[in-house]
Image (spheres, rainbow, N blue to C red):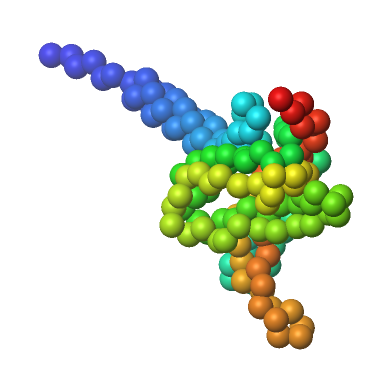
Length: 178
C-alpha cells in the first residue's frame, strides 16, 4: 500500500496567517485611545458640550506634570444674562475623582471677582453654580479635575490642576422690566 503524505505546507501557512492577523489586530488596538471625556454646561436654556481644554500626563512617581499648552479653541461659549444659574454635568469618569468649579464674574458695580466651589469628592455628576447676586454676570467657568497636592517654597499647601474644561460666558442684556 502506498501512502501519500500531506505536505505540512498548508498548515504552516495557516499558522503564519493567523499570527500575522493577530499581530495586526494587536497593533490596531494598541494605537487606539479612548476619547477624552466631555463636560456639559447648561444655562439660558442652551446646552454646550466642552472637550478638555487642558489634559496633562501625570507622572505619579516623579510627582510631575507634562502639560500641552492650553487650547483656547476648545473653550466653549454660552450667552447668559446677569443673575442666571449655570448647570454643569460631568461624566462618571470625571466625577469619580475630586473636582471643583472655578469662576470669574462681574459684580453689579462692574468690578471683576473670582471664586470657586467646594472640592467635590463624593462622585456627584452635576452641580448648579448659583448666581453670586441678581446683578452679577458670569464671565468664565472652569471645571477643574486631576487635582495634585503641591507645596510652595514658603511651605503653603495647594494643588495643581491636570485637567480642565472651560466655558466663556458672553454677557447678554438683562430682560426688559415688566
